[in-house]
Every structure is written in structure tokens, then in C-alpha cells.
Image 1 (spheres, rainbow over the protein chains, first blue to last red):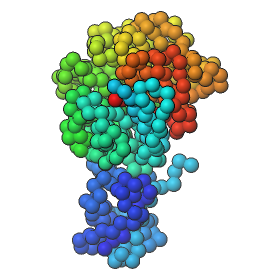
Image 2 (image 1 turned 180 degrees about the vertical axis):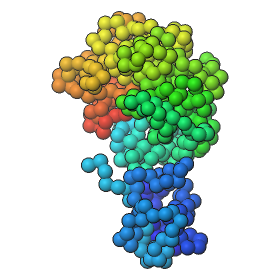
Image 3 (image 1 turned 90 degrees about the horizontal axis):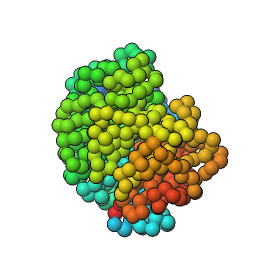
Image 4 (image 1 turned 60 degrees about the vertical axis):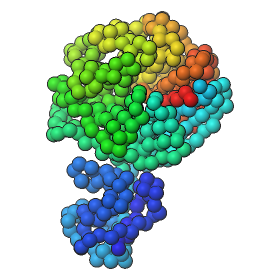
Amino acid sequence: MIRVELPQHLRTLARVDREVTLDVEGRPTLRSLLDALEASYPMLSGTIRDHVTQERRPYVRFFACEQDLSFGPPDAPLPDAVASGTEPFLVLGALAGG
Amino acid sequence: MSAVRVLVGTRKGAFVLTADAKRDRWAVNGPLFGGWEIYHVKGSPADPNRLYASQSSSWFGQVIHRSNDGGNAWEPAGNKFAYDGVPGTHKWYDGTPHPWEFKRVWHIEPSLTDPDVVYAGVEDAALFKSKDGAGTWEELPGLRGHQSGPDWAPGAGGLCLHTILLDPSDANRIYIAISAAGAFRSDDAGQTWRPINRGLKSQYIPNQEAEVGHCVHRIAMHRSRPKVLFMQKHWDVMRTDDAGDSWREVSGNLPTDFGFVIDVHAHDPETIYVVPIKSDSEHYPLDGQLRVYRSRTGGNEWEALTKGLPQRDCYVNVLRDAMSVDALDPCGVYFGTTGGQVYASANGGDTWAPIVRDLPPVLSVEVQTL
């Protein structure tokens, strides 16, 4: 079970609490985690990564285990603590706009 | 009809303003979708309880919501706007090629007859259509694929398709407008398009009378005369009586003919409204006086409407989708400002009063007569 924390606007859009839990088959990666998130909450499709290119939206960041995972390869394994549910995977909106 | 519902899109959410036919006491519901930029909210003419809302965010992109009960409850709808085929390029501000990139939905136009059919005008300019209540969207690629497409360039607000007019007398005829490409018409339900810009003159392009390249800000139509269109261009107020085949200027005695909005009285197709703005580099009213101008002659002869509007120290703007009329008698006229006011006139513009004064900057105003 993977724990994912969403920013406020996406929590409101998906009508969920701050943290959601996902089951991801196999060793979870960024891509498989986001696939599972969008499968469970289709309204989030296109809000975290582009519909067509599947690239992370520019003002969205991914943090976990005190690491910035925003720029890692999408098929690289996520940290063990995220895979085990010990630590949450954080989706954040970058600070911008004043 | 005994009530009105005003749908207001702002920089930080949507608001629904309701009143009975007297239009003197208003209930304010909102903000809905707080924190999102709401470019447009519009109801279906075929089912007034079916509403569509366009939400946009620099962080999280484009979202569409749909309501089936007049705006009390909303559900997420489809937000995948994928261009047909390889998008190619249009011109950037400096004239160099720039890839077509979807940014947001500026305008939603529900079908006149089917609440599940809805059109979306987007930035970078393209027209999309949904046949399933905004669940899925498909581009009508004939527009962006017009031979002039690679020459389209953005206006200051982006390369946006902001106006969609559906001809109530001909289901195959659609008008659209793009800043800064111009106006286009389809006579085959959106499959093919032709520019309709003859008569427009724009000093900011090399050929002032070019077929495309004009910064059209808004077009308005009265449903009883769908071949007569009124246009607020970047500069100039224009009119066509032949479905856009030719335009003539009707700015007449306006103190400035720069502006964004234009609309037509619900019961008199020769009565039109604009809000003159000082200039393209000074987006506020002349002399700090917020004045709506009304022509009862289809243009050229204009009168200032000032009663109830601030006549000193007012430096707000009125954006292109932020004026609408109701269908009551007398006709109500509404507009919203970048200062967060929504003004209403229940007597065709003779007098005005604010419904609300302190909303976030207003992007769009639509009115439903219930």
C-alpha cells in the first residue's frame, strides 16, 4: 500500500482527504504510481502530468523521504519507504505567484 | 420567465448570482472552485439546469465541471483536449514558428438544442466539440488546419479562440473569433472554415487589410438576425449584414473605439452596447469614468450610459467575455470588471447598480433567464 499526499486543489477536485492510499502491482515506480492514482481518481488525469506527453506539469513537484523525485526517470523504483507505505509520496504545487 | 441567474467567472473562483424578475435583490453563491481561474461558465439553452464551467490553473492545468441542477452540485467532466494529428506551428510574437500547445479553455458554448453537445474554444486556438456532456472532446481540425493557421499569431492574452456563435436558423453555420487571427465562419457544422475579415483594417500588421491577423476581441449576434454581427475589434467597432462577407466600421461618435465587450439587446436587434476603453496600452476607461455606450441604430450613433456607474477615479477593465443580457422585459444588461464589480441594469442600460463590488477580477459574465 502506497500513501500519497495531494495538494489542496487536487484533494478538492478528487473529493478526498489529504492522504490517499493506492495498491500498485510490482515494484512501484513514479509512472506506475501515477497510473494507479489516475485509475482510482480519473478526474486527476491531466492535472499532475500532461495528458498527451505524460510529462510532469512544470509547477508540480514530487517529494518523498526528504528527496526531490521530480526529475527522476519515470521508471526508476521509488524508495523502499514509499513502496512499503512507511513514508508518504508528496505531490506539491511549486511555490509561485507571490 | 420569472428569474435570472448570473454566472460569473473570476480569477479565483465562480459565483452564481440569482434574483427574481425585479432584479433588485440578489443572492450570491460562491466562491465555487475557489482558487481556480474560471474563464467561463455557461448554461445550456436546451436545459438551463445543465451548466458547464472551465477551470484553469498554472499548476494543475485545465479542468471542466458540469452541473445538472443549475449549479448546486458539480461533477468533474472530461479535460483531455488533444489536438488532432501532429499540431505543427503557428507564429510567435516575433514572427518565428512556435509549436501549438494547449493551455486552457477560454469559452464554452453549449448547443442550442442538445444539452449534451457543447463546444470549447481553447488557447492555443482550436475548436473542440463534445457530444457526451463534456465527457470526451474531439477537435474540429478543419479550423486549425486552415491554410492560414501557420500564420496565426497570439494577441497579448495569448492565441485564444474566445467567441463561438451558433446560428439558430442554420445548424451548419458557426462563427468563431480568434485573437489575433480574426473571425471565421463554417457553413458545414465546423468541418471547413473561411476567414471573414474583409473590411477590417488593423494598423499593427504589415498588410492592414490582410485576410487574417486581426485582433478581434468579441462578436455578438441577435438570434432573430443571425447574418447581422457586431464586432468589437482591438480598435474599431464593426458591423456586417451579410454573415461576415463584408464589414463596415460603426464606431461613429464613440470617444474611443478600443474595447473588449459588445452585446445586443434581447428584444431590439439594432440596440447594441460597448464599454470603451482608453487604449491598447491603457486598459481602463477614459478620464476615470466608467461608461457603457448604447447605440439604438445599430452603430454610429452612441449615447453614454452613466447613471449608477462610477464617474471618477475608476480604472478597471471589462474583459471580452464579461458582458451579457437577459431576456426579460425590460431587457437586463450585465457586466463585470477587473475590479471585482458586477453591474446590472434592469432597464436596458438607463440606470445601473452593482450586484457585488468585491469579487476577484471578473473574467466572464453569462446570464440565464429562467
